Image (cartoon, rainbow, N blue to C red; front, side, top):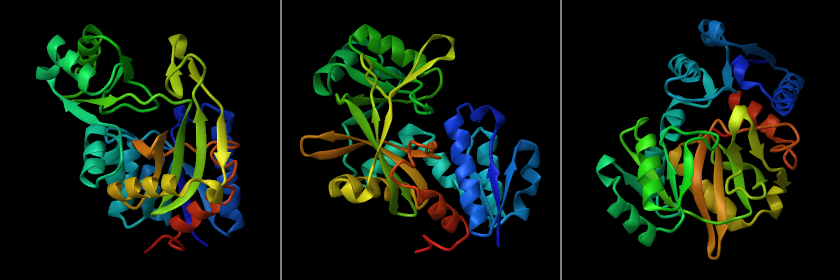
Length: 296
């Protein structure tokens, strides 16, 4: 029997599907004979008392979740997500550089500085990459600070806004699609596959609009043994470029295969969505945390 602490922040549990996934995970871990506690920011001093920590809060090197991950790592406690993965994935420039160095298939991607934000450079990028062009702030998440621009003026305006948050931003070729694919990877093995359908008249799976509302499309699970082997191979290559933890690899299908759009640490797991065709994922996460699986 082991002790597992699930680290959460109160503000991150906003949907019944999120709570449902936590409840399903707790039930599976307890059925396997483990004690499960929910721990919050004031409880972080208790982390060394646990055998494993499962982080289900927004990750960022400036957030409490990173402190929880580092505390676990420094005390020899197995943790999802590990702080090294958080550090890489929460900086898109760092993450894409890891993917490039590993030769992972991805849309053409450039890193821009303040000197690149002028009309002439914008026109050049539209010619060489695509029109529209996708700009991303490096520390964005949940599709925030990811925008599509169609004119040099938009390019300069959005780029300058993003550079208030960082010293470099990302420009990427736009790939049109009706859905994104995500492969959940844990310890170098595929855990689940799903499609995130893009809502009508939108171009990304999550769109933030006024009053804090979010528009998103439905999620469709895919059986692992029915997934295209090229999809799984590309996702596993991307995960390996980052580390050996738990990742959500976002991909799009192109004529000659699949390209990686980004790698997410701390990937979303919602009841009835990511686990649709992968009910085993809760047990696999538990066994990984307890050192019973994924040690090679």
